[in-house]
Image (cartoon, rainbow, N blue to C red; front, side, top):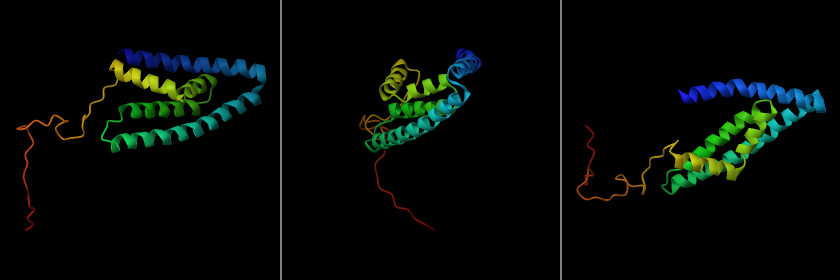
Length: 151
C-alpha cells in the first residue's frame, strides 16, 4: 500500500509545485520568457535523452554480447525514460528532476543503490551456460545426437 500512497501524494503535490513555480518565475521574467524557457528545456531535454538513450542501448547490447545480464544498464535506461517524460512535461520542477536524471554519475549511483538494496532484483546466468556455470556432471543436461525424420 505504501507505493500507492507515495504515487498519490506525488500526483497531488507536483502540480501544485509546478503551478507555484510557473507563477513565481513568470511574474519575475514575464509570461513570454517563461513559455520560451519551458519549451527550450523540453527541446534540449529530448535531444539529450535521445543521445544518452542510444548510448545506453549500445551498452545493453555489449553486455548481452558478452553473456552478461545488463541489469544496471536496463535500470539506467528506465531512468532515461523517466527523464524524457519529465522533460516533456511542462514545468520547472519536472525539468530540474529530468535533467538531474540525465547526469550519468547520479543515474549510475541510483541504479547501483536499487540493485544493492534489493528494490530491483536481477537474476541471471553467471557464465552464460544452460546450467548457470555450475558444470555439474550428472545434472539435468542430456548429451546426445538427434536426426530429424520428416514423413
